[in-house]
Image 1 (cartoon, one colour):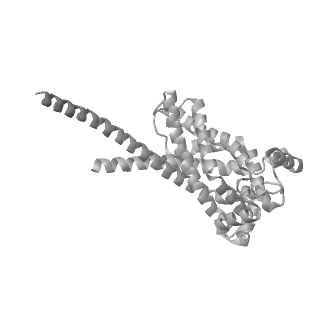
Image 2 (cartoon, rainbow, N blue to C red; image 1 turned 135 degrees about the horizontal axis):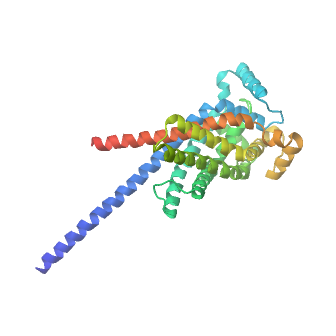
Image 3 (cartoon, rainbow, N blue to C red; image 1 turned 180 degrees about the vertical axis):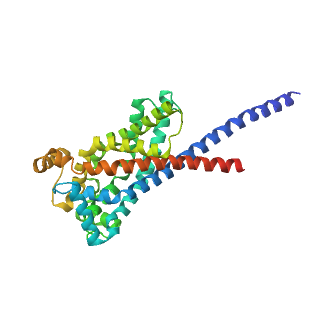
Length: 326
């Protein structure tokens, strides 16, 4: 009889443990799937957005790293001359390097943002809900910083390829090899500090603005999900605010990244700023190309956020269909 009771207890104990283990395993699989979906959606979002605005991005970088005066007319002339001299595809010069950088960058940034939202939501007691303003801003800044730190040398390479002729650097690997040999490995991280300082307000304000507009829209319209064109508009506003806030540091990092091929010796952030202001003026120097960024930035960020959201929704639907199909 004692053995029977012990067996019954053992079976009850096993019966109680199994559902807990199963629940924990299911939760782990769900989290893993969420991370993979975020990485894929982010990678696609970054690739689509950057390819769409690559000619404008390249033109902006060329003006940022030179002392030539910027205007919409001069930007158009530069694009047109490049097209006549080197052909239509030359407008996307450096885009392969951009893809090598932006795909992991966007994947990490969007995935990190989802994870930081989850962690901060759990900490502040807002799990599964829109975060309060400060944690919302913090999640975006942390996501941008994480992505920028892990992919920085690729950004350096992309800037070099954008401002140099094809004969100088034949491909991405050639840029790495030549910079390492001629300028040293430390050069691959030149401009790292202004990049980090710039990405904090840029990513923070971009994600904050987009999430805030979506939250406000849901409260006012009663619809939990905005339409695609509304997402584009929210993303455009996010890009406009984020990039305007961090633009001078973007100019500084580009100057420092391309110093080896432009003949300048930019060494520090303040020194670079002083030289730009003394030679070109405050607005015409540190805000050079900003008007083009007001065209390019909102388009790119709008496409990026919209692509990410719609891809996430599609992947969830595909998973549900596959699950119910079983």
